[in-house]
Length: 74
Image 1 (cartoon, helix red, strand yellow):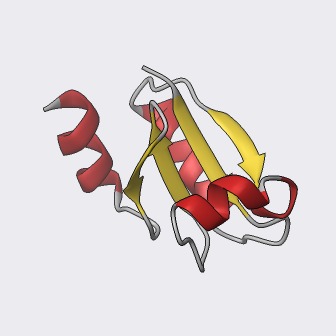
Image 2 (tube, rainbow, N blue to C red; image 1 turned 90 degrees about the horizontal axis):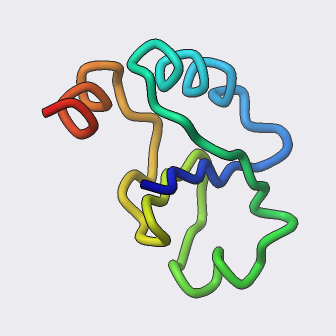
């Protein structure tokens, strides 16, 4: 499973999101909206943070730790 965090360079939520994903054992990569206009445009993304899984946009806002647990751990 490829988990991609697509955020702005100034996203204040990134450290919390990274911590939460690490706490539940999910590996991820961080990419920036400013550096990936094609992904932003094709998914009609207008805010940060976003989580894409295997290239599909799943979350378009900061999910809670419980939402992440339910999604990734069932």
